[in-house]
Length: 180
Length: 330
Image 1 (cartoon, rainbow over the protein chains, first blue to last red):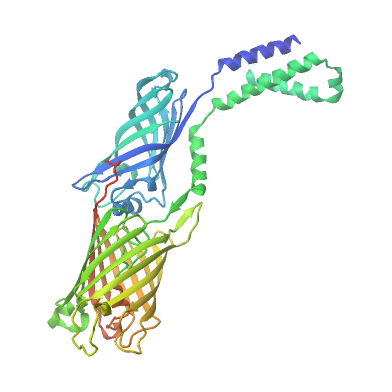
Image 2 (tube, rainbow over the protein chains, first blue to last red):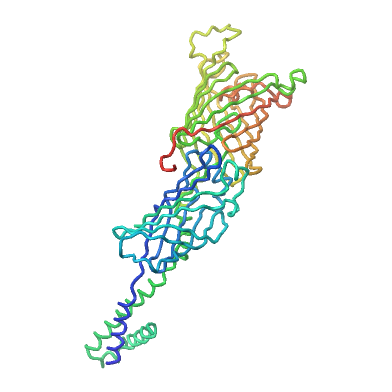
């Protein structure tokens, strides 16, 4: 009887000691990219970024459908899908990584934090290790992540006549995710 | 430690459910052990939550998404014209597509005419996308001094994933006005509407894979006025077309219209071409036995014969301009 009571106590205590992790998710994040090299703007937006993150571990994932990128110019969008990103073969791009300084962030308080995310960015089926700076904002308990960075198009096996000419060799990426 | 506890308690609970032992237990102990069991459960739940792995979650979701999402097939053909006729493609919403097309004289006209290059027939036109499914266009051809206008609406879009649709269907309608003065005006044309003709087309296309696309075009052409009284005003034709992707930027295309009912003295139109795409331009080079570039002139009024060498070299140049910008991009 005593033994049962004791184990009951230990378990009850341990339950309170381990706090549940919180999962933040959105399917409506925004990702813009700009690779304008010449006169003509080469830019697109994707408003269906799927992202999830865990507060304690800082684990964070982003996933986008390549076909979800909308261009002003339909022909450009077709070329982007057909010739450059080959979206029928590689329909998605994603990032899987961790926010390095997540442990130092108090997710229960409002605030703005500079963060660095490190992980694997996979585009066009080519995975590259990247480290991306960004900001994490907590306002009224709602979380949002913003980041702006450049990637080298050629690093991801994307080739084409106009890269380095009409298309800039580096694409500027702007990410804005508000989590539910 | 936690796990050991929970295992031990689960064993206890199993024992406790055993009928013989149950009888020996008092009610207090029963309640306590039940409470303990729930605490264990609570703990295990937290243990599960503790091991959230987003990477695995994402992989599982990606697999689910490919089944649950509908993916609309795009880029069945390079541009809105296959060669002479309409392809299944539309220009996007807010896009203006300027098309300049040339058809030269016949190759068999000899070196004196530089194998046809001395004679050129031209069409200048614009296409515009009102929505992603509806486009309109208009043009002027030097051949018969024609004005033409058309609309094309995408009814069914080929898709994969959740909603599987193996082909696309569009409807295209065009009107052509011949303004060239009739040289042998034996039949006096009283009304300008006598110079009008209409085309209705169903375009059924399928992108079989990244390289091959096929298209079938049942077509009805109506002439307000035909040369002879015995000629029918409504002519039926069936067109077939294909594209074969040779490289990222070069497509081989073909187009053939078989006339089911026809006017005398005209032949079926057969064209072969290369589509070359360079950034914002699409160049289409082709050889065809047709000179006209409006639906009725090449489908039902093709005068050339391939076997006699009445082959015209020609090209279309298309350049797209963005008229309406999407606000959120920039």
